[in-house]
Length: 398
Image (cartoon, rainbow, N blue to C red; front, side, top):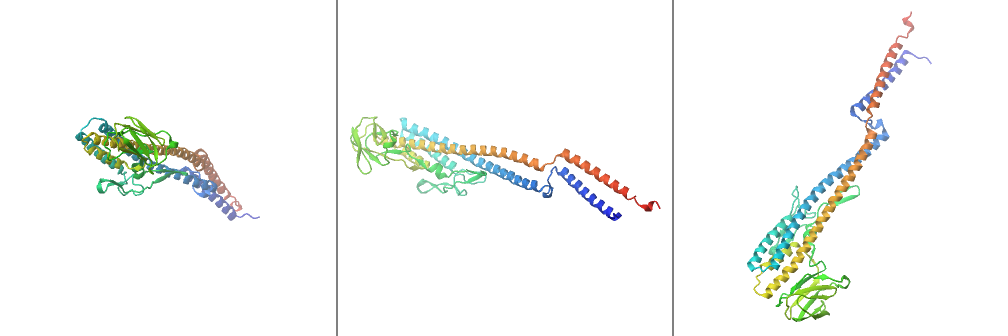
């Protein structure tokens, strides 16, 4: 095959262009610090890099979600802590009003402070976040959840929704609780049943804290304790069926249907007491009833006993409300712990992915600089060799 000068020149130019492209590619790698800058550098590696980048960005979004959730739950936890402090004070005031020999004006003064506590609880229940959204309104976060309705009763304007954020590929965490769940769905009495004295009682019998002695024997029904005489009683269910009875002495606990109902003082003939299944009640209604009981003047032993019965049973409802909100706060705490756990796992996983990404994408500078030096040396040698070949012509010797 005849090799002409044009053939040699074209072959050299092709080799020179290829060498220059390799040098440019290496220089780009050195300047960016990345081994793979375009898919053509490493098609398989580029695909893996895209997957790793997407995973790292997704983890970063989960971390942002966790930060938002942590702020929301932290605000709710603080609000619930304030509500618990208020209820502890309410309990102290109720005990004070029920045990001490206070006058009607003293109890009215306690009722005035209880009104302040109720207003404080309402303010807590209407807490807003940094964006002005109500945290206890469910999905209706733009609407004030609690307002005063007709007759002074508290009205809930929110819904039952519970918003959630995704904090990992497989986990969501709730970032709020509805006001209905926190402040309204509170069991009365001891959680199983509630006690009440008859409105027309004329004796001085005062109910104590009822207890369940045999859960298997408890039949959910309304029972009426009627004192036939000051020392004898009978118990009938809602169908007027006799389920118990006997003699009574002050301080005795009446036992029937798996429950125990202590009564102090001296009931009069015809006095009644009811044992009814526990129901849901909101904390504001409990405080309203407590305030009303303390503001009602007690002028004789019978009305004083009525007040003690009301306050004593409402004190149990306050304790139920306190325990209910403590449980809600504990639930919020468990969510905050879940956020910390998931964030920690995400950070560990992100670190592994980042290391894997670095192994695939990042440049080994020592190897790249050595390669660049060799490529530059090779290009210089090729240029010199071509220059020498240009002098190989017979016409130079004729």
